[in-house]
Length: 167
Length: 252
Image 1 (tube, helix red, strand yellow):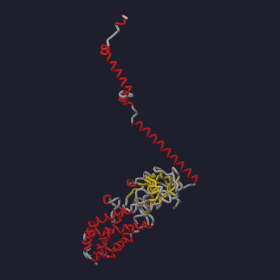
Image 2: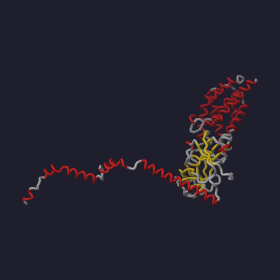
Image 3: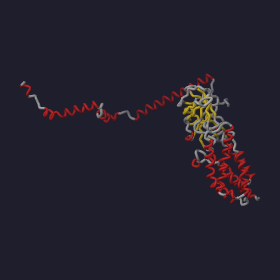
């Protein structure tokens, strides 16, 4: 790998910093019952599909650390995101079929369900079950799945152009 | 008998000459029967230029406001003095205005991000006020930003009381717009519409801050009744908040 490729790779990875920023901005027109999409899923899915299980798990964990810093409380998204990154990385290694729009949408749907479910489970264990929990989970899952074909395929396209080496 | 003949007039003639008087009489009867309709209206129309204008009610209202404000200030000063005598907790330090720079709609967490942090003197645990009352507490502070955990967050637990009846309770966030007020006693006299404020004996929060109004009371909940509280500070409309820093020497 040459220096230029390393630089480009670093730049592509740096786009992950957009995820916490987008979570903070949370534009009102992209909300469903005051819930935004799971931006982490929308970024991690294409990255893991391109870069494999180990990179997916590590980057997912790093992303989760950034996101956990943004909210009060001890609930963590780390296990769910690391697991999802690893799983999607394995799927990406296996076949290219996964990158069709419908597959991207379904994968993002499952990812948002797992991520929200892990948060809800932790809140339940801590005795802080939110009354609107299931509604939030459902709204976020729907929104993420609907956005995934657009956003994820766009990321895939950009990263493929920038990193000619990847599959 | 003859002398009176000259004065006798026929009824028809009387009607012809005296009709204006008859009409006037009927008019007066109509005014009487209608309790002054027409007459009072005419009076109102004529006297309108001399009515008390809006300026006068404005004067009265501003005088009333001035009176209330000065009384409030005096009572607060008095309150501080009495609290000092009783060695109770003080009302806290300075009020620091801070802009709301983000409302991350994570769904799970009800929080705000403020544009002032540790460099400006905001610390974890400080109380955040908005026009209308208590909003929440600072959950964490970075050098130039801080995160407010709203009272509606499902992890928020704040001790409050109902001043009318003097009953204490725990304000528990439910993740929805209205937090629940869990009372400590089984028998309570709280009614919907009662004001909820922070407790005067609280050590974590400044005393007597407005929190909200009891909206619904559920007495069937065990072990003690539970109420839904409508918060008085409009979270969705707030752009600037005030952070009340802790008085020195009272760490949580």
